Amino acid sequence: MKLAIMQPYLFPYLGYFQLIRAVDTFVVYDDVNFIKGGWINRNFILAQGGKQLITLPLQGASPNLLINQVEVGGRPEKLLESIRHCYSKAPHFSTVFPMLENIFRQQEKNLARFLDHELRQICDYLGLHPKWHISSALNKDNELRGPEKVLAICEELGATHYINVPGGKELYDREDFEHKGLQLSFIQPRPIEYRQLGKTYVPNLSIIDVMMFNDQEQCAKLLEEYDLV
Image 1 (cartoon, rainbow, N blue to C red):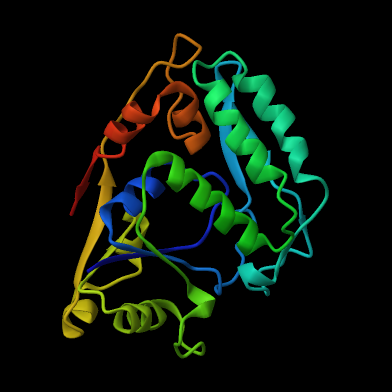
Image 2: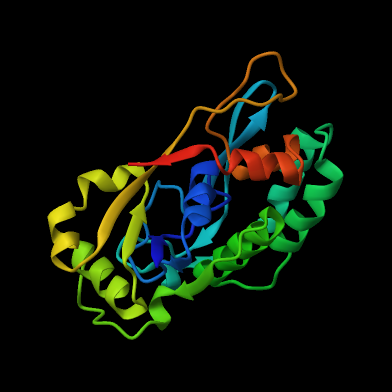
């Protein structure tokens, strides 16, 4: 069984969903520390031929708290206006924007649950349906940290193959996984390009951008553009 474990992010990039496509089971890693200035509550969208940062407002965010201990603050639905302004002329705006409205207008204030709902909605739109788990709900030793915690989750869920994003190469040792009878691989997204509103392609934007400019069939093809190394 192929397994991936990732922190929940705000509308992550295509590679995050390629990782989900590559596995049988996905775990939302909600019981690790919040990373201030990271991508848990921020991402880039397309604006006037360049990048524009969108940020989900939070209340009491601190690296001393777990992701599932942080609250959504302010009025997150205000971000809809930025997205509407930037993408109202995109070819698939009328299909994608109602889904985004549903995500932003949920009443959930817990950050982890807010993002979990967002990820599930997008996966459903993209036709991705792995077995889905929340890390904090698993029966594991919560005193474990780093690779040991990941290995414990793999053992509990019966994984045989753990797949991670490229940044994990600095965190995980293949021998540690092989010792537990686990294969370790890393997803490597291939370079992609699709037509946006401007003349120059702007890469590495949120999944919002991918969905706004590609229909569901095209999105499915883009999700296949990766290698396992």
